[in-house]
Length: 157
Image (cartoon, one colour):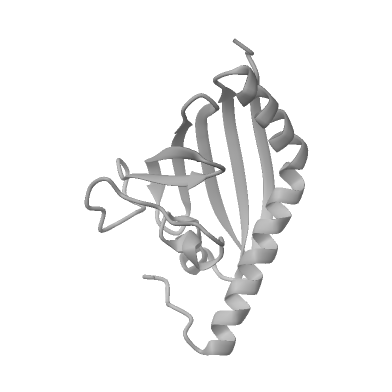
């Protein structure tokens, strides 16, 4: 076993107050700005930010299972996640109000489950700052497109 573990933290700015920005970091809300993000829910989930909600995503021929472990709408959400044979850990998103927008701190704490997972985690760690920049850019672009289309959903989206 590789023994590789990474704790990666960074910040992005979202041009919305926390109550409006929070849904962007839920399973369904990420569809607004992540191309190809299609979470599936094995059980009915009317509130995808509710603790104990389970969903799955698929990328690079791998399925990741996510569980909401804690949260406070408009303030923070934390997920446990497992990609079998690759990695397991948590992802937390904390939103702080700053002059009408949100400063968002995103922390991934992941442990490799194999040598292949260790290589994947090392690459992810190296790319983490650019990864978060891509989040900030994608969110800004999606919000701008929604504003131009006049169909921006409100905080309950």
